[in-house]
Image (cartoon, rainbow over all chains, first blue to last red; front, top):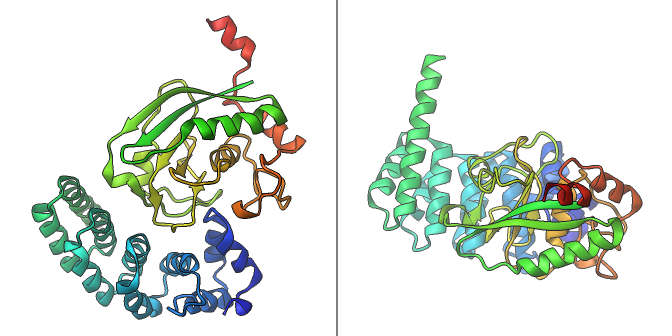
Length: 165
Length: 180
């Protein structure tokens, strides 16, 4: 698994900052994409930290082909890793991604629910907005409700701005 | 020379600020005769920023997320050009310990509150102050792989020190004394 990873990507994975991986995302080389995709495997040979960085990178890469793999991974992830995955799904923004992200709106962790709000804001379609309105009304944590309300207003303002232009 | 900083701690984190400042002062003091002066420490109750979300951590072409815009507004107007933020974690990943990308008009950096590496704060500060980039030398503070840093405390070279000393955020000790 690790032998096939391009050396620059390998270095980016072990750095304690994310900037080197951001450069690789920007460069968009096919071999990096393939290697990142292989890191999504639940094989025990893959370091969970590397898998999490692969999810981060593939979310920003913007190719929705990887959505089914991230969705399959999501139930197996611990909270901090699930947060990265939900954020990535929000960026990839397919219907399947939106449906699964929305199903996490009742998750016990308020931090997970915060990232659900953020992902749905990014997706921004009618179904995402409906879930955001529900969160804004019903979430058990005041700050999550407030965040959802703010984000609904933000989407509305963007929609108005688009119509005007 | 002195670097005045404001520290913003998100409520719910428990950083060892003394350890981080002491380490920064050992490295910057020994190598460049620059010391960090904490003007103020603010505790901010923002649970929505605890697990922080940023678009990227690029030195150039950086995109500022809504959360980054909000976080980097805290601690301004208190006399320091540079503000340091302690967060719980980020959506970048569990092994990402800090980031020095910031909005163009608000210099600063964040670090996670519970890293075992005592030089991460100084590393991020060194990115911001003097715009120092990564180096291959594993004895150097700006080595990008924390677990490979050898001979702690890590060093700074002359070029890095010059860049720090030339940064407009620094004040000379004489100017501080004259203003008292």
